[in-house]
Image 1: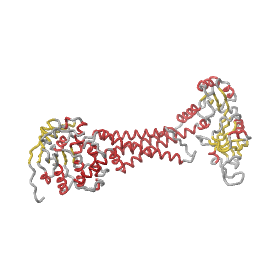
Image 2: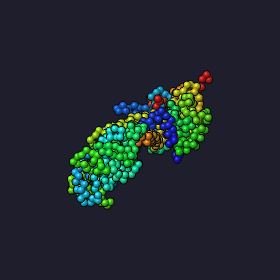
Image 3: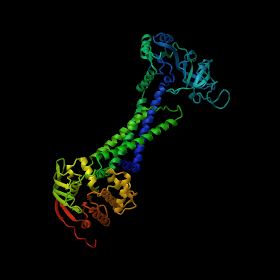
Image 4: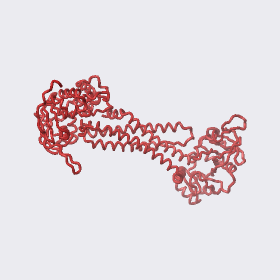
Length: 387
Length: 242
């Protein structure tokens, strides 16, 4: 009977396509909104994932998330270095500074100052130039995304047509010259500011003078070392907070989840997506079963077993679920692929299709269960009762 | 998988069959000791006013409804003595149904509709459809196997329903008002088909109807009233003007 069950489903084309659209739209809404949410959350700790070298991130204990800079005393680096188990510790500067382009345009940028000696904390992906070029005088490395957007010059100093920032161009920060020596690819920040890498000492010169300039201390430990134990030791000795990369990322996401309305907004859209599925596809499938109740009753009278009828309804629900989910998740993927890189935060982790699939399964199972309840309770003698 | 029934001289033997429906505090008695015997090769028509118990009786005969009292044997088998599963199988193997509203599945071709009892019986879809085409030819619908039910007239749809009822070669054909949704002439033709195929071999047929124009096609007319079989008599002689 499976083919007959499918022909019953496909034959009712208006309702079949309605169910598919309902489930596809529900899947699209759930997975697309969840992917954007995850993308946004990923941006909040993008610098942590872009910087794989440190085993521990040392920050002020009151720092609530990655960008909540609470600078440390300059002695913090030495104090951390002297903690047991620490192989190396380097300072990191991270702050928002005003950048003046050669054509006079001014733009806020996230400036990251990495250790002068080791360049630990530098960008992971270089598109032009090399990380070691940071050792050149006045050197900075700029994120590729900003070169054609925020740092695009309408009146370039060479007098040509409007163009993006290139290697060799100069900028100014705090009245100090900076020369672009490389183009890198960095994860876009949550607030989408351009990202500029330079050395720590140069960054300190670019930044307005403050008593405390070390934003964080990056720490390396031995491969076999117990990071939790070393982190606890650093905290005990220095009073500073010590996190592994994943812990720092989780702390940052936790802040955005708990302290902003972002999860509620996206959560509402995701829940709406689920209810769209229930209201459209779930109800349509239930109505489909109800409309075919006489046919199921006739089959029951003709000797279709309960198992046969159960199998038919489950097959119909599963078919709608698989196709609707497939179209929906395909549309979400196409949406994600079609986006210009960095334009919209979009990150589809494997848990999102799984979650959307579970939602679709719940919708289809519930409507199939309701339909089955009617089919199973159907009295075959009812087929002798006229319209 | 066919269940073998013990040899019996009667196709149907019903004695003192009782049935009541209880809804809350209300009890409605549908059958008050109905007695009926039908021989193999015989077509019997159940007639009577609405609510007299005709539908309850054929539902019990076809193993669709449990009786409250009395004895019943259909080709030697009491359907109520079987488990639910076995009764479903018994129905599948021995009973052919023709419903008042045809109950064809609109999204299947007519061959597929006819093939349903065979597929339920485990026959492959291809073989079942081949046999369905033969059954359709038997009721005058050769060449129409690929049509959808909604493209057929009411009479043609009922012929499809008859083909579906017969494709499994059932022993008992149960028809519920097979002509009520059809005009007189079409109904007459349909009943001629039922009368022909319903007597084939040792098959028996029970037809519930209000349509007096087809009474002459029966071997006996069973009049029911108030849950009882009032009288059983021969069919009226056919009026040549009909």
